[in-house]
Image (cartoon, rainbow, N blue to C red; front, side, top):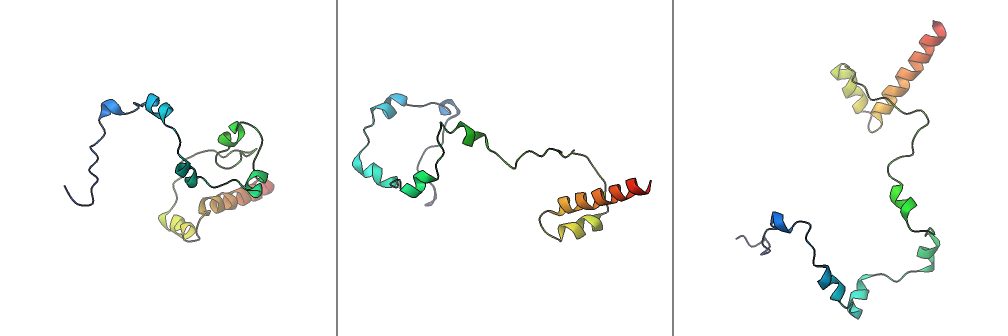
Length: 110
């Protein structure tokens, strides 16, 4: 066994999801274990939200838009994609903005 490998045996598939809750319940927290937890400050408490945390757990990703995007496949020339990617993050949004402006121009002209 190499020196940088742990001597811990691999986890058996039979043990995945198995717990020893009785041992966890029997554990008495020692004073030195509290040293790992920072003491709450007034600033930390001021930033908190009352409740059980369910609202916080549901917040994921960006807010939903009133006008959601449609996923579609679109074939574009490689040099067009390369040029937009070279402009950095947000290149797909920039393509969308250009197509939107052009579609509005065509609508007005038509």
